[in-house]
Image (cartoon, rainbow over all chains, first blue to last red; front, top):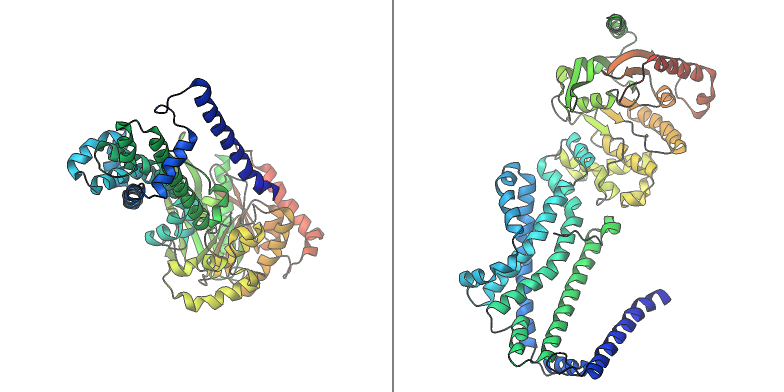
Length: 260
Length: 281
């Protein structure tokens, strides 16, 4: 009980202190509003945004492109990763190029993607998918390759064919790694969506931040940033929950994060 | 080479035993001048050299040897997981060239799928052989009952103890009713107490199922307790050095382990091992 309480109470306390410092420093150093807004002004912006409803179309727009891009990107990553992990020829032919592409900062592709896919939601989906692809792809390959060799010998000794070994052993044994990749992809997908909206958009949370720059409405920016934090947190938590649920046999590893 | 000569004499000796039809039931597993060479960083290494043996139908035979003597390598050949470099292993006269449905393997570790229930694990060979699952479900439950795991069919491996997991491994190897059971140090990872109990249980299973068993171990007492014959293997290169017929009466029980006859056989085998040069790493 006290353990549970403290997990809520301590972060809340830290947050209160941070807000107090924030408020104090504005008063003490006389910081102008356009550089650092008062906490209450940010709260007002959030109220205007969510209760009066100005933010909703932007939030739903960003959520839509993020979720669609995430699902497509991750699905492709898992499929391609699987094929590459299972086929030596495919791996040898494509892996060097994929590694080369991986070492490039994907956000640099944003303008090109706008040129190819236009100003609409399509370019945002592509950008998000591209951001999600790599961590999931790499973790899929690593997961499938790290399968316990003694389990493979066991399956082979009972005359199991490749398909049975893949569906009953490799896929399950890779699941923990794949989920770790999916978790990283949540945050990366948001980066992708916001960057794409920065470059060319008339909607979305990224656009909201960009538009706030025009009239130095930093309170608005803060409100938009908080929205991104909440989306990122909820998304990450959701994946963690699914990870624990799905990979029930491996609770100890359910919280691992393997970076790209 | 003197050693070579000794070996040849021994093989001739073995051949004589094997040709004796009164002693030897119809052979089911045979190996003829089998050798396995693998490439290591120090060049080609002979894991198994010129190994010949025959195991009769319904026999319980142990291969006993120190680690690295090639006994597990031979088991992998017999299981069809490894191709020999020379000679052949055969089951009922047919060369073993790959995994076969009439062989069941029990591994050193239980190697159960952690994401599958006990029942699903046990039925893996049935799935692999594309036989109808439904028809084998009752057999799975019977076998689980035999090893005292009737109530654990729906459990996951992590909920079972090491001994229970290995029992599931044994049931899995029996589910498709193979004629030959290959056991690769199946109790090596268990504690001494569990190990002894598992030996007794295995004897019961063997009695009940009438399978031929090839049992790999590096435990002298275990080999003597369980086997009809013990084949002693020595390393670098892996060869069978001696064959000991264990003529202890059956069924054997825990009391037997305290008998002088049992101790005498164990002592004889220990003496043979002490004559082998220690293997340099």
